[in-house]
Image (cartoon, rainbow, N blue to C red; front, side):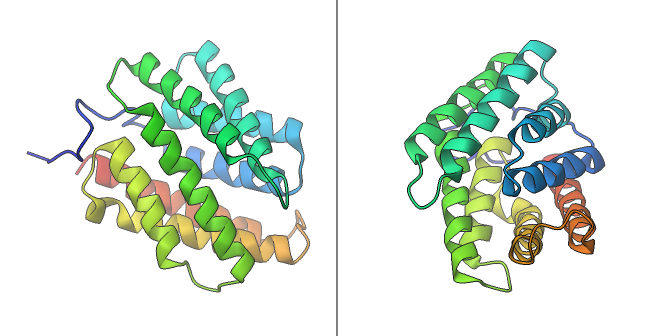
Length: 203
């Protein structure tokens, strides 16, 4: 029997999703985020939340709005609002838990979510070419907590997603060109990441 991380009980939420769809929607979300195209980010977030968490439509729309607001609160440079971002993500994870009827510490899930945002921003500012160990660890911690998996089983998914972020960072540095081949590279890595996560969840 699989052991569960401390502080969690019951099955994990959203254990069934299509990696191709989730990866494509997340790629679109990242592209629109960095181009500050908020309306398009909301549309991408609706698709991402629906594909990734399979909530009923009213909660999907509400959840996508919360994700958008969290990203807007996080995006401001140089001074942003991490507490506000965490509050939005806590409300988002509460919707996920309520829709699934499964137990989830939503405060901790939100903390772990925004923590990897923080680690990525530091890594992005440092201009690293390879995924930082700290970023992979932050993503691993989030996945292990939300999906009730041993960290070792979700580390590959975390590593691939971090690599997709490095591609995204190169795309941003190059000027956010929609026709850049880096977008397709980023999307492919995200699809592989979610395929690895789905395999870990059902291992």
